[in-house]
Every structure is written in structure tokens, then in C-alpha cells.
Image (cartoon, rainbow, N blue to C red; front, side, top):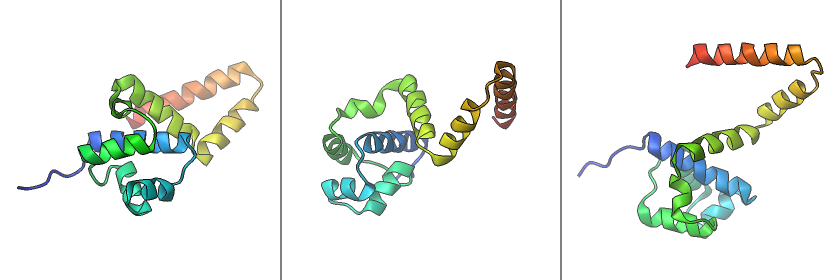
Length: 123
């Protein structure tokens, strides 16, 4: 039987695993130790490269102290995960710090409008 390759649901699941791990302030190596796998395997789960089976997902949920449903709570949760992962990057923090230094609200609105326009063209 041919094994299905990882896809978009696996990537979303991986993002949620990473979000929870970062929230708990534990490394990939620490999570790997709890699961009995290498940090590279945890990294592959988080990137959606490798699929997470049901039994492994239960182990991950237990290790991260959340119910399995945490990983499947609909589109609102997906948007929240994206937002939190965005805030976790160094580049995003630089962007937010620079934006917060702009005092002129007109310039702030223009900047946001420009960024939304660029994002719309990228999509």
C-alpha cells in the first residue's frame, strides 16, 4: 500500500505543534526526548514534512499538555497560529518595532494600506 505524502493538513498540524512547543518554552530536542524521537524528527513534524500518526499525535498532545483537539480547532485557530508564529520571528519583531516608532497616524495608515496592497498582489 502506497503511503500518502504530507500535505496542507500536515503543515497546519505541524504549525500547531510548533506553536504549543514554543508557548511551553521547550526545545525541539526536549520534545523529542519526551516522544523518544530525535529533534530532527520533531522538526519534520513541525514543518509538515512527515505525517503524524494518531498514536504519535496522542503522545505529542500529552507531552505538550493539551487535548488532541487543540490541533484541530478550525480556521480561527489556524489564523491565531499564523499570527503567533509571525510574532515569534525576529524579522517580525523588527517590523513591529519600526512601525511603533512612527508617530504620524496618517503615515501609519498609508504604510498599512501599502502592505495590504502588496499582500493582495502576492496572493
